[in-house]
Image 1: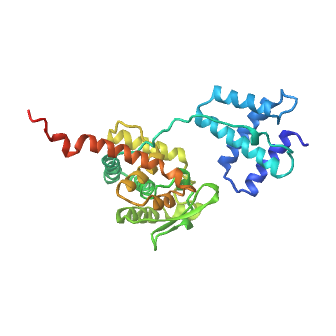
Image 2: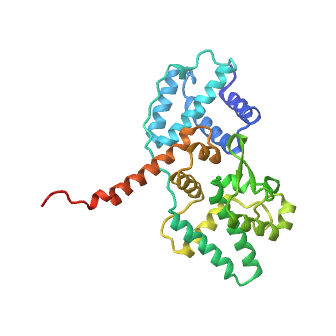
Length: 308
């Protein structure tokens, strides 16, 4: 049998060429597998149940449940690959019962009135811009945030949009999601359509030259970090007390649609979730709000039936 280091590299090549996983996922696999190989180097048989049991115990001690779960999933996928390629006679994971309790964290959303204030602040900044340069990049910021909230796309998906991915005639966007899965999203709001059209007209030269839809000040692809800085800037301007991240627009998109009685299966497709189970976490947020409404606003609260 080849060394684990060689097998790891073969597996990562398989992930890239056969499974077509993105660079971010492959990087995480590389880190996780490198950590395991280093740990297993002290064992005579690094693929034994004894070694794996000790390694999993170490993960549980040192990492949060979510991180532990990811690292175990990386390792299980690697061992499954070895088994499938007949490089492993017995997969020790087949006889291991792994359990861990992962705390259920509800997605953090931005209240609708806060989103409204946030957008109002960006538009106000655009209107009050004193130079063509300020006005130009304020317009880009409007297009970025409007699109982020209008589609619920991930920040990585937004920053990797190419010019050919957007069809302004039909008001649709082709989004490349995780695992190179594509989905089509319609833009239904006229203000959003107007903002994106104005942005494209203003940045036509830079967009055509680079090929990317969203451009930074050097004419290159707008980075995820730049969008985070952009959001922080307008949060400060609007004097919003809560911390807002790009992903919270995605959470808000899904939760507010669910509260507007949109079928969860449509939301699943718009978010690009492979499983409805992933989307169902937003029902917990919706139920949480429902409980608050019924606790605080139900008419029974004002009824006195004591007879006193």
